Image (tube, rainbow, N blue to C red; front, side, top):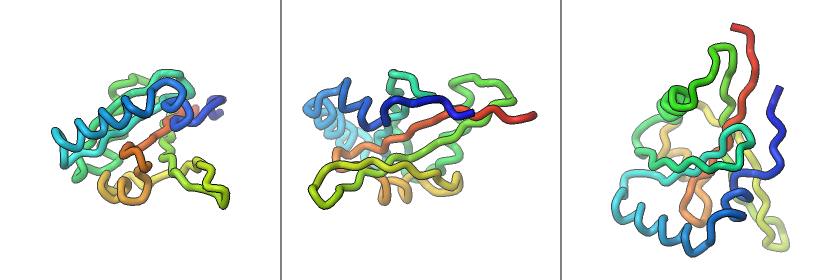
Length: 132
């Protein structure tokens, strides 16, 4: 069963990191790692944000394999990554929607479609119990 999540990754970042700090970090990443995409990940509804700098030429599947190794979950659990997309309604109010991504897509392709205007890619990863 999916974990219960009270806020999106985008909302969690906005609550805990100032806009100035986000902009400062983005400028640093753009200067120091121009061939990478800064990524903020929320895992399983946790209030902690994991920060990654992903190479544009790697696939999303490679990132998910590395992430799965890092978090050390049971073989009977699957990870479900959702990429958050920033859209705006007719009143110019931010609305965040989530999409599941094909693991063979490159980080560069994903960033072109899903990067927020602050320069970050937002990912929400949840666990799903499966039968092994």
